[in-house]
Length: 482
Image (spheres, rainbow, N blue to C red):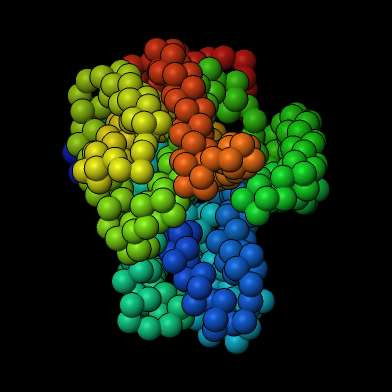
């Protein structure tokens, strides 16, 4: 791509480049599918004659594939043009959607979900890398705020959207409805898409690909087993996965000597990026943990239907996404500290409020606490993403965005596993002491939220270490050597 093309966004400061708007829309549609199957488990069990444990794999396999594929996207985005990467990602996603819609058996449906997830894994790093390349620094907060619509509202909307669709007909409609929408976005996106930057010809280290897939997949799968009360096996598999991830990291450090790593760990040589990674990981852990616990509380202890549960929780997700652009504009004008510190404090207060759950807490209080948590996380995510990525040089954008995506999947899996373990351990202990089932479950949930409060305290402390704006002084550090 010529220098003229790359400078084009600077002449239209204040407006979101068309390529970014297209990628946000596409990312929203593909990420929506990560949670869209959660409400369809009973239908799958009846239609395809599988157990609940097997049916859960339509979501677990999606998350596993995302974790396994994301480490390769740093290399992929440097090797191919923007149009090629977009075409591959949307093409693979569409193929997976078709396979899922017509799946005659559960195994074919599982294959379709794996193919879908392979395309989805590319979209978020592609969006982040393109944004950092084409958007001027003074506009990044505002544009990153728009990105929040894709990465926060889509997962929150998934169960609610599927709830409405399943009122009409079969679980296959979940894919039939998505297919033409994604197809139109892919078609118009390719017509309008422009290439950003020049691809770099480089070889791929297949050993790194295999170790990354097995390691990341192993960690996520091991943690997912906690939800099925297979804690011993889960710890073993997660530990093996962690060892493989460590071997992957060692391999990348060795490959950096020849500038051919699959995932460039020199991103971690930047202090601001490291702090951003930790803050975002804890934030996603809290968000996914709350998304797991709140439906359990509302359905199992307060006896709300799945649809009413979704309707009660959707205002928080909508508020998070819709306020993202507002927080982005505030960041562009005042910097990150006025958002990140109050956001960390707000999330601490919300999680603290959840520890006060009772069997009679008014629904308006639950709604208010959930909205406070989601708005607080939105206030944190937009500036932390922007500051963390802005601390990297341009040639590490794709690797930085891939690392953020991988940590997001791991944090989500760990958050869910942690809450399941704390909940089940405390509830079992309480019931063995003669406590009623509902009271024991409630005690377990309060303990899980209490541990999240500890994480929130750590987050609040770390926010004071984050610079107000991207720390460009880091660009001269030795870790930046290309």
